[in-house]
Image 1 (cartoon, rainbow, N blue to C red):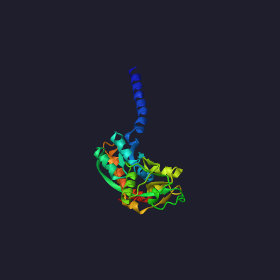
Image 2 (image 1 turned 180 degrees about the horizontal axis):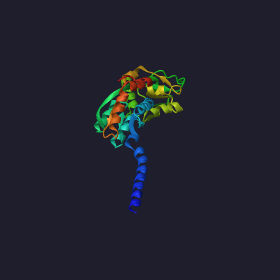
Image 3 (image 1 turned 135 degrees about the vertical axis):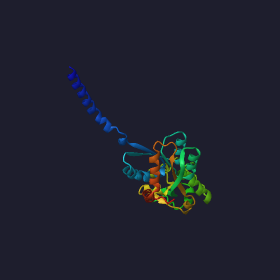
Image 4 (image 1 turned 60 degrees about the horizontal axis):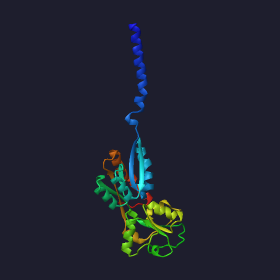
Amino acid sequence: MKKLGALVAAAALVLAGCGSSPSSGGSGSGSETKTLTVFAAASLTESFTALKTAFESAHPGTDVKFNFAGSSALVQQLSNGAQADVFASADQTNMDKAVQAGVINGSPSVFATNKLTVAVAPGNPKGITSFADLAKGGLTVVVCAPQVPCGSATQRVEQRTGITLRPASEEQDVKQVLNKVQSGDADAGLVYVTDAASAAGKVAQVDFPEAAQAINSYPIAVVRNAPQTDLAKQWVEFVLGAQGRAELQKAGFGAP
């Protein structure tokens, strides 16, 4: 009986060992997917989405998630406790607000610049040729709200030219302005050159020299208490590096 009991015990140990091997191989930390959450200005949608694939390929097991919106809205979300790893703003003012709110880790770095243009319907049916034309009667013009980077840039142009616009609406991010022009709800909208380029064929672009007086710088930084601090630093380095610069330049952004 003792011999039989020993054999049963040995068999139980073998079975237990066989049962434990799949779980030890399938749930190890090396196979876990890490999510990198990036809060970024709406105007970065196309370029950052393009960089996502390359970054994920270089960092197996990483899933980059974006929250694209107006920079002012993103700062508010972060200040209210929203969890993120990286913040990329479309202007220095909103990054400064994030720093002052204590939600940024370290010093932000400028990685790109951008400037305004006028988006109009294909063929420019209203014959808009200048910034001053936007102040004429009979046009439905949309702009970004003043707290949004593209809105503050619009205000700077107005102040330096002495031309006051009377927009039909003030949108919360630049993509909303672009969408109103694309849908025909507006005759013209002030957007970034990168946004007009992303909608080539759907809108036409009317550049104006005064835009050079309101260039926006784009800073990026790791968020304080980021869940993925190391990955966040690597994303920032990636954006600042050669591949990031090339993709941003392709989208129409200027150099820092």
